[in-house]
Length: 246
Length: 246
Image 1 (tube, each protein chain N blue to C red):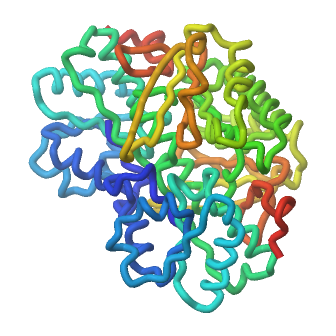
Image 2 (image 1 turned 90 degrees about the vertical axis):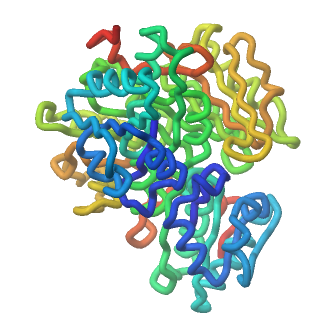
Image 3 (image 1 turned 180 degrees about the vertical axis):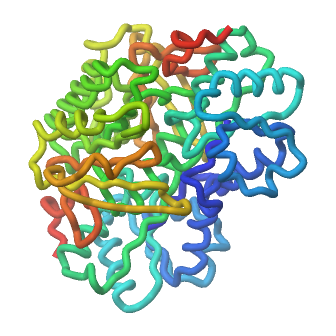
């Protein structure tokens, strides 16, 4: 399981590169395969499938590994954060293959970390990641998590804030947060972080427009202390109060 | 602001390497400077300070940048996750230097992501990061966050679970979680992930011993669905229920 990081080859860990070099088979969603430096795919069997083919693609990867071929399944960001690591591990378990296939995770820089770096320092205190995708998780569960994280003053990182099929979820999510946060709270929208078409936008919770997000966007909502430092989002950890920074 | 990743050079992003190569001055806590490949420090001014010197060290880095020297402040993992990015940004703001010093964050693989990769796939669903350090955050706030995250079934990643000065905090944290989770819930302890002395240990919430953790440990507590798949921690995302994985 290989995490590619946010997208740019400059953020691909050397260990991920080595794993891809060594692999005979590389499987992944086509959007992520496009992020792999082409020289790492040359001469390999590539298993590319579209958005809805996760299970099929992982099954092919498992078959390939079972046949003794070194197989890399790639995910954008980290494969353990809304990526394929869990699905492949679950499949190995269900099919009683844990003893027959070596399972290894090569960590990558998660999308939210790439997005946060561009925003400034919005995650410097405790934060929670929530996916707004209700494809595999009931919306009631998502809503409960948003409510809990907002009420306990976590910084919130929202994955999958919007898609063609689902609209209105980000609106509902921001409305839940707004019951616990001032309208001045900064909200960052980062689309295509560290990739072609990168776009970074920050607004207040009161003025942020959910239409700015699409499925390639990460949304970061500040906690009660988050403020703008110039054009950067800053969640202070408390040094100023304790030590003074003048 | 340069995130070094978990520690091994194989997980240091090329962009972080480039930033260190370019820098004239490298500042950091000595434990993290030890993780920088030595050739990247050769011939540079190195500002190393001990644990309690964060503010002083960042002040020296800011002075150095202000003097026109390309300055890298390193953090283990990612500098925006309990790292130095927030402190430096806040100092630039407080001293009205935002217009005079360019501030850039080079993202790194956070410690929790390195730890999770070794545990299997424990973070595959929504998760929350909480630092148990009460040096800058009142324990009541920490407790409120633990309670909220546990009640809404987040996977929990605990940073700074223990130190010489503070004992008993991890015990209290696990007790809060235990009010919301079955005793069979897997808990992973990862010490020195991807570094010399790496140690990975998993137990149930009922049997985990807080004494296994020290300040170099990340503790990952599963959600209600997390289970062991062989020796790996697995938090399923819900594919099996929707598609079947046989």
